[in-house]
Length: 215
Image (spheres, one colour):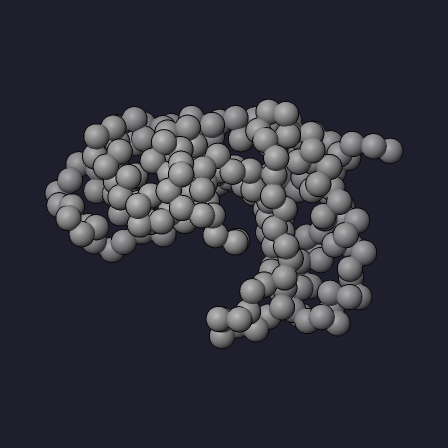
């Protein structure tokens, strides 16, 4: 059988187990579930979407623990990402909570953030309308934000909430039944298409402003 047929329902249990026992022993004992029930279906899913959205990066399952106090060797989720600009693009993730789709920017260089804030100052009403429409349609706004105004910006700025963002994303969950069926291809396609306007708005400020971080 070729093409995407859905994720293995055992994928969620795999990550629940990994959260309880994040060890090499657990990983090796359940490696086939990861390889055949998570990573392989993810690659097949992304292949179905390449023509419309571009080539995807499937993130490695191992954590970079060199500079972290948490030495857990494995990530508690499997993510994949299609870039539209440095550290900006479409995203999806499988974890103990199931699947989520999303998009936005998860990192920006100082130059990129400066460009974004200038763009928000000049054309932020467009971004505010895009975000408000997505939230109204059931998307959740997230991202790292400053507690106060960025340096050089007034706390009274009419779009101060957007200016505070150091990263910005919209995400929403996918039902387990959809995640484990071939219909997930259409669901991800529809979700990502809804985020295209957001990513197109962000792209000019971030494009060419720095190297993408490893995630």
